[in-house]
Length: 223
Length: 364
Image 1 (spheres, rainbow over the protein chains, first blue to last red):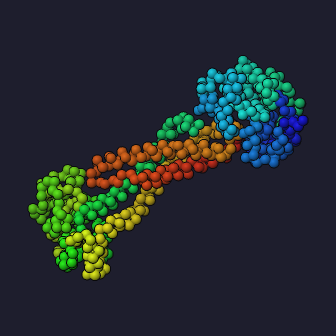
Image 2 (cartoon, rainbow over the protein chains, first blue to last red):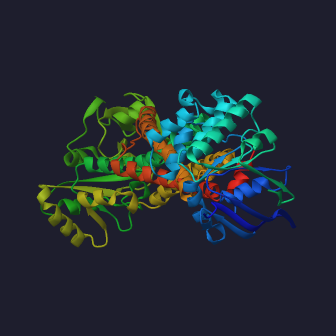
């Protein structure tokens, strides 16, 4: 079966002033559908850049990226945006909820952007599963970190993306909330075969995943 | 989300709405004032009751821009034309220091009465002496003038002999002989108002006058009224357009600044929207919709503001005639304000749409 993510000699070079700064120096990666993969490594090793490329937020400098059969190198920025809208869900370390909207509106926003309209059944299912049904009318500032991250996960999965990309999802949480968030990611993966690629510094978090890869200096050093 | 964003930044919202409202008020009041002044002058001229106006060659239908007067004997020749009931000469006197752009009418009361049907005296009566003046009720109210008051006009002191109902020519009337004396225009007049025995003879009388006085400015009242528009008045349209341009610039600049700073504040939010798959068009549209919402509220506030400013102007300056807001100009002002807001918001919106999602998400 074709892997849902495949990268071949993936490179990304940022130009800062007149200096080329390589962030990825040839990453080869395969992720199967339904897999829960943890990516670990020190700061600056290219984990977030890899996540951004796989989510179509930025393009690679060279190499091949195939996500769900789509070759990102052949896709325009608009195509990648459309792909992201339908196939990718992001969860960030800083939750990244819109502060002016309630939890409900933050989640519904993803459905609105996707353009398929509000699906109340799916909405209720996700809210129940993530334990935020009682908090839907609260704004982010009235929620704890754990609750905010659960709202962010709900927003990421509400449109049933093929891949969930989580960038240090427990980085801003205490142990109890970290466990709760990891447990939910695990449930999503096991119950719905949700493909998850999670960046983390936390070995306990990485242990929740099916497989862990380690990155250093823009390369995958152990898989 | 658009409404929430508008409510979330109340100061920015109020300033933007205020700017659009001021823009709308400026457009509508400037138009109301200029058309009001023109229409008021036209109505007062029509109110004299003459069917044909006769002016020397080169004279303007704007009385304050009138040319050199002509011999008053012309009036006798006009009176001999068939179907002419009465002719009254008027000598215009301008006194910018006390009367603005208005014109003081030097009139001959007997012939004036034959053409106009006479004044309606609200108090006092006709001239009793050469230095008497008649004022209309609007002028009297605005300047707190009563019968017996003295007025300094044309560097002379005049006594108010009567207050007349407004709507006939000028707001100030002095004896024709006095006007001639003060301007060294003995036996001369600026214009002749001709009354026909029947309005149906107007064209015949006009044709006869044209035959008698070739090259003179001869207009029947219908022609005169149609000429009294801003298009026919020198620089009025330019003035209106300049004021509209200024007003639109205010709205444009405030909305531009408001949306630009908003976009900078919301860089991270835009990054979040992009991470959710929001296209450039989606981001462009939410910014433009937000600007449109501000503009629509501002336009509504502008309509209310216009009505209030008009009321204050009319109460403060009773001689000022400010036309009420017409649906045509209300629509034009709304379109101008909306366009100004959209153009003002377009660059910030485009900038937001073009933000790199990774940079935007990293924005502190």
